[in-house]
Amino acid sequence: MRLDHLVILCADLADGISHVAAALGVTPAPGGRHALFGTHNAVVSLGGGTYLEVLAPDPEAPVPERPRWFGLDLFEGPPRLANWACAVDDLDAALDAAPFAGEPLDLARGALRWRIAVPADGALPMGGAFPTLLEWQSPPPGETLPDAGLRLRSLAIQAPHAGEALEALGGALPDPAITLTGAERFRLSAEIDTPHGPRHLA
Image 1 (cartoon, rainbow, N blue to C red):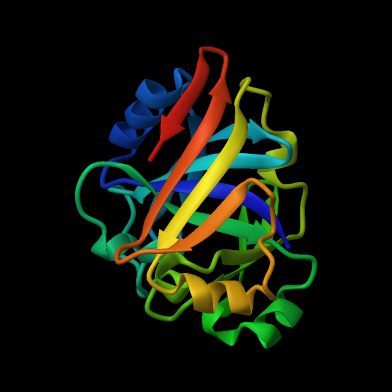
Image 2: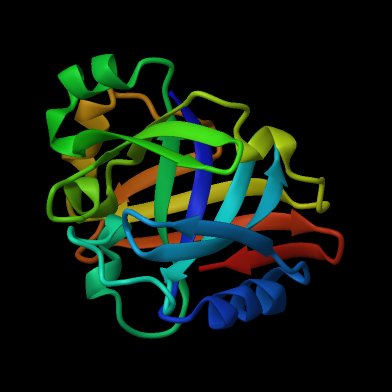
């Protein structure tokens, strides 16, 4: 398991892009649409094979037949860092060990092909303490996006189910830059090196 990407959720994609640009001084580029979930995104590289995704409901898409992923249907407020995703080599094997992470779905967008675990209710696994799991079947964006001069320095995860998540992860986090601690409410924050110096993203 390895850290694949971080997700900024927002009600409006333009607002989410502006949020990242104001925080990091770098503007994410338009990505594409996800028909199954009625969403669209923008992306930017974080270096080291990781990237940042800005995700919002697509106003031009019909209402999806299933809940949107990453808890987006219940999202309220301004754009914020709200999810972390980890790539695995074998999603089925990972779900055998962590069935609560969701059901495997086969997705595609342009040249991208991937399998991802999404709970039936669209919620985040363990309220966000456990990562979204995915398996790439094509080169992932973290390896193909242009270098934007961003580097993830640290990711802090605070969550009520931190202890349970750490146990489910086998007692080890997938990246030395990640910390996972208990808290009354779920919160993500990242420290990122940028061309303009270190910046904070939450």
